[in-house]
Length: 144
Image 1 (cartoon, rainbow, N blue to C red):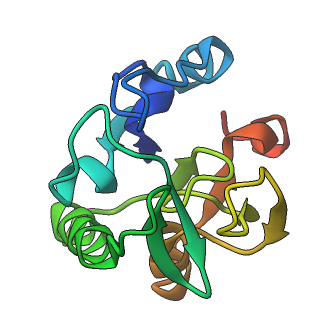
Image 2 (tube, rainbow, N blue to C red):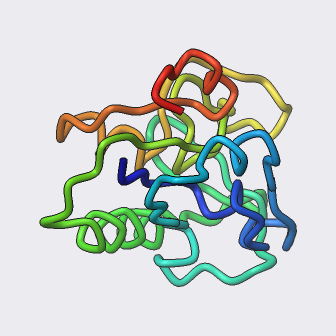
């Protein structure tokens, strides 16, 4: 299988705080599959580290109240271009991320309150028919 994966889950230090979300269980389960890493926030030109970002009414704002929506959309567009023409069998994304969240995202108040919804990349991929899995749900993916 060819699997698109949030780069932070693979150990890339691309999170807003300069760290990663390396997931050893996922790495073991990805063995034998072709992995395509993606970090739309970095693709959109946001640095590492960078201010924390949350979505408020579908718009990306950083913790200082600055609208960074254009960079987020640019990153999503670049991520989609990166996989154009490829057969992607599965997408595994980081939970709760403003770009990669599959089921939930933070509500935009920077109070750690979660709401149902998707990050920008997750929503764009789902709208295009890709099969998405939240990293926290990989036990329910029998092919892995």
